[in-house]
Image 1: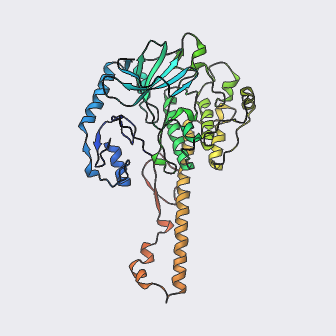
Image 2: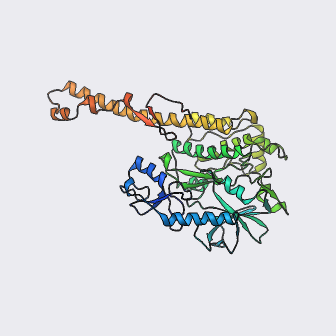
Image 3: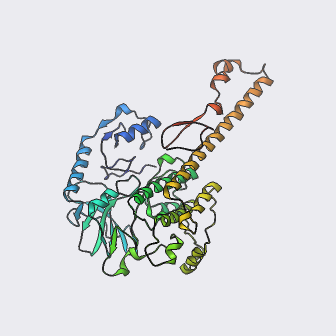
Length: 431
């Protein structure tokens, strides 16, 4: 499902990134040139209107290109430091979201056009790095983009971030607006894990992996390629290397431990040394359980947080969701091992999920081919048993040997590398 905005003219509706080479199609919409060409080669229709559209219809959009270049140049000249009330302002005084120590407001640019944005306000916190560092971190396709910081008089850290029109994954699942198949869930998990591998390479611990911190830019219940999610709120923990607490610690989100998602070693110690990639992997397992459970709260039947803490430290794990087969469940359970060293890394987790995703695609493809094969066998049997009654014109025009699909000749296209594999040949994808 593609969500477009009348005001967000500087971002491609396919990639949800700022344009580099904008091109307008015959549907009147503008896209990143490489992205729309790849889309049209596969689908032949507009991703917005679903009407037929050709690559030849694409024309460069010089106006949008100039607007993007001006926005980037202006941001760089300001060193990604903007002023509240001068460069941008709140659209509404009421927040889009509010939690202890953290508030998100819809915002808009004042002086020049720019992408749709929100203001993330973190009470009692300060940035440990220059604004450009946070902008660079947001360059990953599955991490919410930060355009800079905002100087303000609110004694708070304020970040300018891209706006996700579809909201967060937790709400979409809870409200049943999004009911993804397992193959779609696998795609979403892989996108999140790609972001976590990127953060781990920077030595950054997320500390609060949960569906509420996964923003959704596109979603489709059955087609994995029409889903795009991005990770947000990374580094907002007491062990953060990105931010630090200033003033009263009672008002900042950095001191809050997400108990139901946290690894046992975090709950057993008040120190900071237990925050690691492996504690994030544990939380990733909880996130996957939450998504497979259509947004249910982990340990939702238990109101007492101390009881949840006790059970987790004891090693009690959540039950297997209905929308989770044994293979995926085994991967999730590996993330919850009591010993952090035994848990997989995010790179290992990615390999396991890639293999499972490819198996799912092949399995689905095999079922379809089995159905075709059965129909073919029936047709051959019928024409053999009743040759006099057979429609000879049909048999001449559509000979079975040439037109009937066979499972041996079936191929599938890998969504990651676009390679073609035999329907029952390859089960493990090598990147």
